[in-house]
Structure formats: C-alpha cells, structure tokens
Length: 428
Image (cartoon, rainbow, N blue to C red; front, side):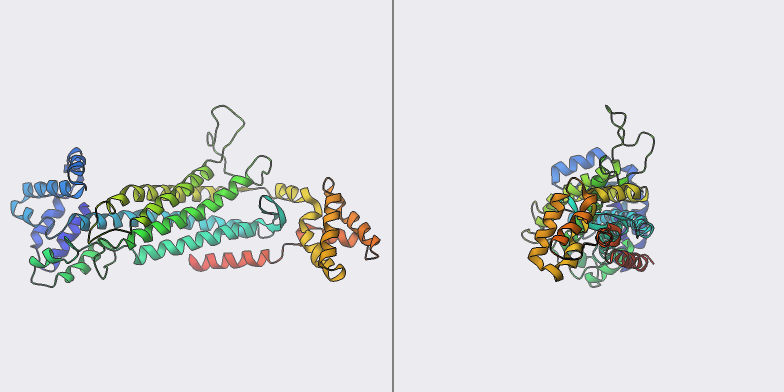
C-alpha cells in the first residue's frame, strides 16, 4: 500500500494534480518502520478494511515532515483503489516467483524426458498395468502441463494485473476535482509507476483480475499436483520406480527409522488439494452487488492470500522434487515383467483379429491370459498351443517376439521428442 500511495502521488504530480515536492515528501515518508502496526489492526476492526487507518497514519507521518504535503496524501482516492492495486502487486510478485520455479521444473522434466526417451515401463490405467510406455513419455506429459502453466502465468503477468483507480463509485469524480486535466489522464502514469496494466475502466465490482489470478493458481497447483500424484504412486516401496533425492533428516519418521517419506511430493499434494476450494470462493466473489460490494470484496482477502501462499510453496517444492528425482529403470523393467506378455495383449489382438475375427480373438486372449495369470512368462507358449488347436500359426518364437513389451511403445519416442522441442521453444 505504501508503494501504491507513492506511485499515486508521483503520477498526480506528473499531470499537475499535486506539487512535485509534495510527492517526493510522501515518498520519503513511506517507511513501514514508522507505522503503528497494532493501530493498523485496530483500524481494520473499526472500519472493515486496512486502508483507513493506514492513510491516517501515513498522513500523520507526512505532516511531521512537511505540514503542507500532508494535504496531498491519498488525494481523490478511495480505500478500494489502494488495496486492489496493492493486491495486484502482491499477485505479481507471487506469480513471478511461481514462474521462476515452473521454469526450473520444466527444465528438470525436459532433462528426464530426454534421458529416458526409451526407458520402457508399465503404463497404468485404473491402477492396473495397461500397455507399455516409456518414462520419457510420462515425463513429457508432465512437462506439457507445466509448459501450459508457464504460458498461462506469463499471460496473466503481461496482461491481466491492472491498477485500480475509480474513486468512490468508479467515476474518478474526486480525482477530477483536483485537476484541470481529464482525470483519465491519471491512469496511464499511475500504471507506469507500478509496472501494472492500465485498465479501460475501473473494476471495483468487476472482479475479473482476481478471477484470472485465481484460475491460473488452480491450473498451476493442478499441473504440479498431477506430477506429485504420479510420483507418490511410483515411490511406493512395492513399486520403487522413482524416489525423491535423499538428504540427511529429510523424510525421516519419528517412529520408523527405515523410512524416507516423500516430503516435496506431499507438500505439492497438500497445496493441490486445497487451492481449488479457495479458488471457488474467489470465483464466487465475482457475483457482487452495486458499484462496490459489502462482503464480496472483503471475502477475497483470506482465500487469495492462502492460495498465493500455497502455490508459491507448491512451485518451489515442485522444482525441488523434479530436479532431485531419482529414476530406477531396472525396477521399471522388473515391474513391467510382472504380467509378462499380457501387457501387450492389445498388440496380440491387433495381429489376430484379421485372422480370427474380433470376438474370437478376444475370447482366445482372455483364455490364454487367464491360464497364465500365475505364470505370465508362459503366455507365448500357451498362446501358440491354443492357436495350434485352431489350425493357425503356432510358432512360439514369433509369439514370444510379439509379447516383448519393449517392442510395443508406439510413438512414445517421437511424442517425447515433440515435448522437448516445445520446451525449447517456450523457454528460448
């Protein structure tokens, strides 16, 4: 709020609304150490927002330096102009931190995708082995969502964080009373002072800027949450395909010395599960009455603060998680073998359907996989025998080759390459 008041005074001086000397006196007096913080809190209780007591104290501080300059503090302004603009500065600072950490995360994921372009693992759907994929493709999928988040954060930072300047009811009438210039001339220099966007109209009761920030926070937390959800599964003891980077004391249990809990993963998941609920409150706050609302504006403050805090933390933890992520290809290969050739039953179906027909093929493969459920390595031989009974090609060597999961990854490598190319284009 001090930054906003100083910018307002300097912008007003730039168009001749107040003396330049007064603006610089206000800037010199804008020291948070001079404020009575308990008094500010008491002012919120008394007036329903923090600006009234803040302006009163700032005016007194300026008066102590130059009595004449005190008349120019907060000239023509209203509480919502100051607090909404200050909120946009906070959002900008938070989103810049998020952006920096998302770039770190994207870089780490691009590295994993490239390093494991051909590392085969089990693809899982509805918790079960489905078809083979590569870890490179999984990392590429994570990377795509993070790149989507980066572009959305960049859009909000560049175009969706406006100053708020409207006066009591959005007409700029009080500002107009203090200048012979058009009061609209104040908006551009005010925005330029702060590095924010100059909006076409006041937005006291049009809460699109808050909704835009809320939406990108939800997208970021969801994108990072997807990564954390996958890592949480793949770091399970019985799966063991991934692990967080170890460090002395990190992830330690108070009761079980053998454990190393996934700390960064847990922190990201914690945020991802809270942010959508907070964002729903912020979107609901778009539905407000009149030119300035009673309660709608005020209801934004706590969920916005908490959502920003959670997403800044999630982005930082996401970067630490992905940069330190340990990958175990041998464990991936061992898990892939758990179902033997059954994991490529889709491929077997594609080969057999032109020969047997769709219905007969499904019945035969269902029988073969059921017969070898407890001995999956025998699937090629059992399949060959069943085909022999149908008078068809019974070359077990051929079916063993078709059952090799590493030979059934489709376009995974090329899709991974495309994700890496996109990364290079986005972060160039």
